[in-house]
Length: 256
Ligand code: ZN
Ligand code: FE
Image (cartoon, rainbow, N blue to C red; front, side, top):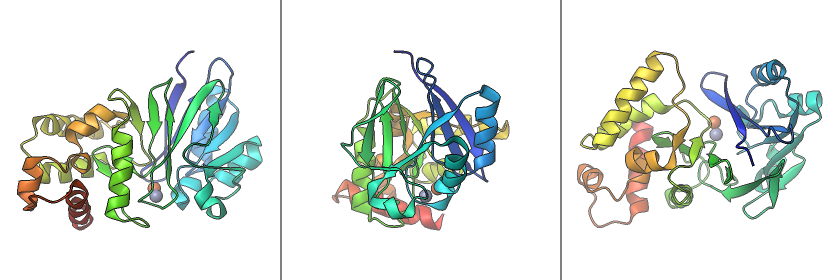
């Protein structure tokens, strides 16, 4: 089966919507719906019809265009069942284990609570790509608006178990600020130093920093590295569980 065609669309100030197109069936879906116009423009340019919106979580910057796109394309709106009443136009609620397909591709729904309590991520094993919304960012993670540190860290660990080569698209272009924070807590990590340089160059050229990969995040994202002795030494946290180091990192990032 051919890999889905993937198109990232910048929306609002720093959000991304992402199109997936299955060439064999002609179906197209969008992951999150921040803003109707740029999504419609990209679909129109390519001559694609939208069949589904896959929503990661209820926040307005991921759902604001659901009703407009549903009215225009007659598409379905798929999203977390746990947030059903907060997702405009929801036609089908999903959670981990819900059977879901895109054309002939299997889609795995992963519960990834923490940023919001119902947040889900979507993993497409045949295309080796996952959409992590505001849970896992390139070099960062989402704020803990509804869940606690232990909950969010469990979600990040679940994503970290995907194959290293899995490409990751997230909901925001926050990578440059995340890189600066990452360098402040683990400046001795050579993979991080090299990546931060590359990110600076890409942003200076106006390019996206996504997708990233699970392998790259495991090597450089401090929120996936609470076991790092360098990070623990810098935070003055010795024999505590990983999630407590994670929670402290998240607090520091909030103040950065
Ligand atoms: Zn959000
Ligand atoms: Fe967001």
